[in-house]
Image (cartoon, rainbow, N blue to C red; front, side, top):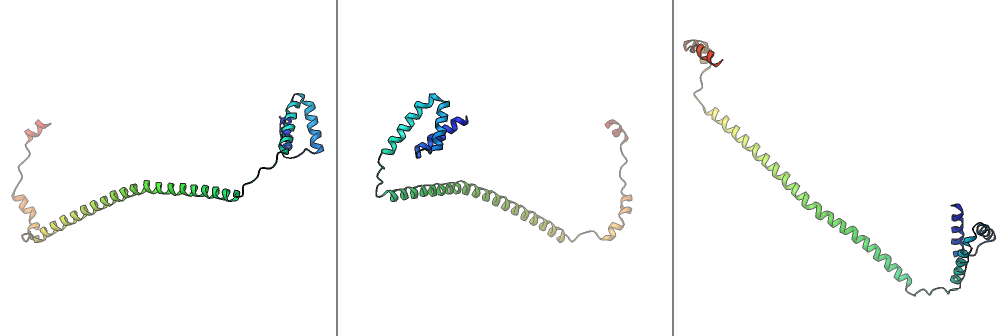
Length: 165
């Protein structure tokens, strides 16, 4: 596994620059241990040599402007994406919040109306009691025991109680 990594590392170095003497010695040792990879290395070396002979591609005169325009386009797209997410969030949350406020407001209004109705009913009953002028005097309550003895209650019907049991 480490041998394959060393070979891959040497291939990548060869793509970028010529190998140093120590790297070439390491490559020769690796190829001696893996003779089946010699053809692959020869192809890689030939391709790298051909690519180094190619002339550099001409860079267009407006290359910098095109790169900056592409960067601005990407930045605008990401800003637009953030803005669209923000708008979507508001479009989703505002109706829900409005319904919540409406339900809570209706509940508070109903509670307030109920409490007001109870207060009005209590005030009317207090007013009714306050308007009554024919309340018995306290002396009447003092003689309550005497009046109760004057009007005896009928005795319990023992036959009826026996039938109920």
